[in-house]
Image (cartoon, rainbow, N blue to C red; front, side, top):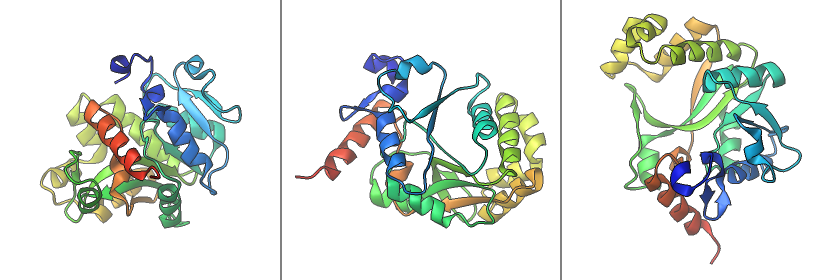
Length: 237
């Protein structure tokens, strides 16, 4: 996507004329519950002249997103809200809904959009859905690391990332029966969260958002066209 647009990083790809990272930052800044904001990127100079002066920068880790999240947790502690620069449609009300639905007892949470909601709000879209026995959903690139126990979940994520080319090792990490149930679509939402809890000691939750557009990010040209169409539809006449 970056190469096609002639930019060095996808984060600064223009979406309806605005670098998409600025769209994400605007929504974060408009959310009352969000305080200090920092951007994680491998080459901070890419954002020179783009970032507002009060937005910090964390150098990303070469090991992958999980290691970068761990670096953010080490620097800022919890609660830590994590999202991605390609979530160009991100809205303050989605963030607020997500945070309000995360109970105080929750250690880590991920926002998801149920398949029925995505197809209702973005008909005809082609998204990847994860199918559990009681919920089919698409991720929304919105995560809350709510307590120190959430560090254990990021550490488990790091181990999974390191072994992504070795399915048997991942099966060993997560448990063969869990993967077998997932493949057979017999793994429930509660069972998945319970397994994460058993492995990490953290209480995990999948938080369903009410707007299916939250599942749309900019990964391919069709996503960019869809995102700009949805932005145009919201513009005042």
